[in-house]
Image (cartoon, rainbow over all chains, first blue to last red):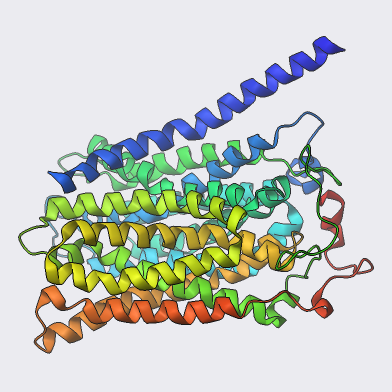
Length: 43
Length: 459
């Protein structure tokens, strides 16, 4: 029973990492690109 | 297609509510591409001439209608389909939005290939606009139900994605066009097809992940208040009954005025900064300034909506109106003393509050009208956005034009506009001041059968 709950927990953690990575990585890439462009204001 | 039904999206025990924000972001990051559509404008003016516009090529004025149509249909579709989205559930809505969004890109690609502008109006403008409306409101009520303890933060995360979608779309589109560009081809049609496929995939993943909470679910340790507290109601108002309340129209005007004030300067930020500080802000620096404003627009959506969970929705809008008033009044002063830093800081805060206005409003509606139809009511409210999309740029452009033709130096041509924007925020402050709890006669009763099919999955 305890093992089953532990499996469920680790599977949910993996899902959370995958789901947040799926949206977070492209978003961070976009933010970095925009930040690089924004630096032109200070040049 | 029953797997799309609301009843098939009820979460199993052990489901983490933190999976719902990425599901919402899958949709909002994709439809947020709309803010970056302008990257296609110039390439589409030389589809025939390739290196420069030739006879028969489309004009910028004709292409400008694509975005305007999309925003118009965003408002229309969110208002028309709001109830269907609410009762059909988030998965069905996200799936429909994915079909319309990708379909819009594919039809537009055919339009570019065949050089037929009305196909792009139909594809991106109409079909894409419908996807924008359905996609924008689809995760809102689901997030509010999963996060009754922090509804502002939850909706802020999703709506932040709409602001952030352009960050991905803009460099991605430019990169794709450079890859597909040949001596005889601009590469727009192929870019549309790739974007359609990628966005469809992303949005479908979101629709697969999304779940609604089971009946009676509440986060661990959260005890829902039994009675209404201040402006936060424990009752629900039927979607169309909300239109009969003064609260709906007061919030409609609050959103419209806040967005009008922000959208006008957002579109003109580059030109405005260069004309107010000639010689100090170059076109390259102005482009950097626009990028920085986009970041604050996105960040403000999360920051202000999350803050509203602690200080209250009404107080958050009071901050927007009061702080915005002082900042708009300060902008002409920064121009007169040549303070670029002051000018930049003023606009970054203003634009963060513009984004915050969008992301805080779903939680404001939830406080007023309850959770049951909040998505549909939010859909009706988005007509304020469509209206502001017309008013804001027109105000800035026409007042500037009037001033310049009447001999006002370009550096001071925006001063009147800034004071008018400040004035709009005063009206917004008054509207916000009059927001009171909804009268009991508008509350849904336990015996109310309307929208009964949606009831079993309600939290």
